[in-house]
Length: 189
Image (tube, rainbow, N blue to C red; front, top):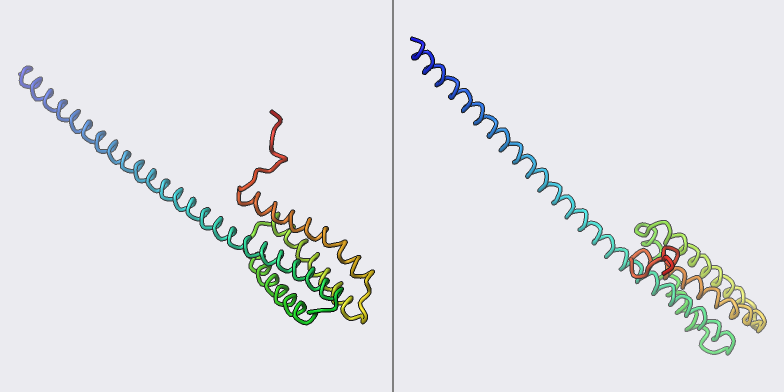
């Protein structure tokens, strides 16, 4: 009797252990599938984040190119208008070009306001204000007939400041895009 009970008990214990082992294997497999799924989702989310960052960089780069070009052309048109006033030739054509360039800058600046980070927007705003102040100064000079050579000379002297502001704007854009490293972050060798 003891032998029969021992044999039956051993069967039951073996079956119980087998069931428990099978259940543990199934739980481990389910946990592994969950971990694999979570890992796959994390990889997909990381890929989406990289794609969003790349799209943002591409969008900012295009915006920066447009804004930089428009600002440079606007400043060049101001210098051309100044020379036209000084030489009293081609004033109307230079004024028309100036107005076209002014409009182009306003449009690209408006786009930049929606896209670029605050640090770049700060220097872009300073550049825009400087260029518009110079535009106002030129319009005042043009309103006085004959044109005052002293006023034109003073305006011309201020062109260097305008170019310097545009250079700073461009530097900040390049830093944002990662084209240049921030000199402040460089360590001594």
